[in-house]
Length: 222
Ligand SMILES: Cc1cc2nc3c(=O)[nH]c(=O)nc-3n(C[C@H](O)[C@H](O)[C@H](O)COP(=O)(O)O)c2cc1C
Image (cartoon, rainbow, N blue to C red; front, side, top):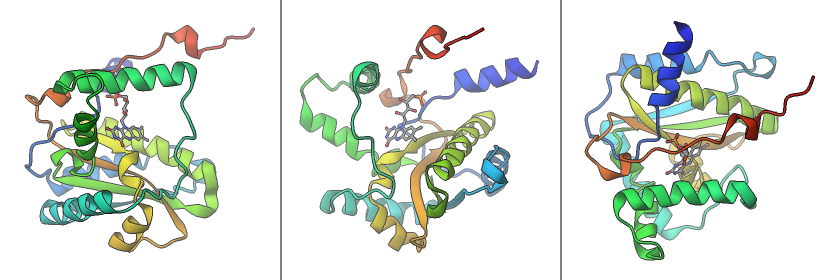
């Protein structure tokens, strides 16, 4: 029974790229974060912290972020991947094409792709955004712990009928985020999670990503 419930959350969840504007009640947001906080972390350090914006504060942030993305060069705290090759490149392309296809962007239409990319900085219309950070001194393992937090956040949200999307694109503007939210420099900003109720009719939400076969992942030895 537990596995069925977990599988329903895992398979029902997807990254939402168009939200309705109505807010999520604060007790539900607190519930999602309390659930996310149950994930394991090395030494139980629990390195995660989140700033959560609501309503008018989200709109102020959205505007400031859009301005920053239009004018400043990306400078993420955590280095972005140096490349995607082989199967990773294939999967990256497939999910990009699936999104473009869903929203009617033709292959090679760079201007339209760039406009869709800029939707990241409009937070896809979400009424809430969480900015996730961890202590710099914990290094990659602190970031790894926080990856678990992101997943549990997404599953708890799904259980409450709340859609979300993790966004590295937002974390690209590290210095701006540190200033804007007064997050000290001894913490790394890892990603944002925009969240709210899904806009079910929006084409950006009309596709689903696939997963590799088990044998591509599992290297069994006995
Ligand atoms: C750490 C992380 C960062 C991500 N950053 C972005 C992003 O900046 N913009 C975006 O549209 N999707 C982003 N995503 C969503 C992924 O593209 C998505 O999880 C992946 O394609 C699998 O699709 P699904 O979440 O719908 O299952 C991110 C996901 C993760 C886990």
